[in-house]
Length: 207
Image (cartoon, rainbow, N blue to C red; front, side, top):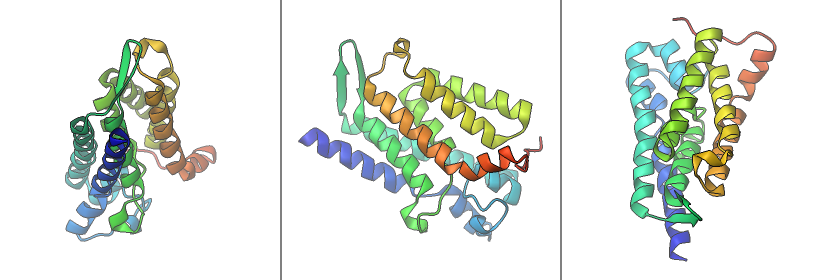
């Protein structure tokens, strides 16, 4: 029972931390409601387009930090699941999932947040840094070739969710559930982008 309680606490704390949407906060500091400009998404890409490089840098750091801090909270709560020779920190996965949920649907900002990709990658890095690097590498390649940030996020998410089931990575089925949940959330939040990609009306990133 105590383990279940600690996992729940990790989820709640991760959610409250993730709800500190950096793009919305930085936008207010810069005097703009980021959700009313550009693509109206409270995320890194829209911040870059609307507010510029310096604001985007703050959002980049903030979105990564809250994912990492949430995972450290999960590590501190120290709930593990063992299956044979493999194990996963369930409280870390729970806190990380909460951070991404909070980023997407922040309680402090009327549940209107970002798309969660950057925070999800930060959490994945804490759970399995090799998978995270593969995810980032595939994202960079897709964006460099197509200049579609949304396509890079979706493609990288699908890749990780697919290959995470390979036993080589040494994770329990709870990790697979976690990765699939992250993928579902990222793809769901990118549904409008997917529609624009299909209609060839999605905005491209300018290097």
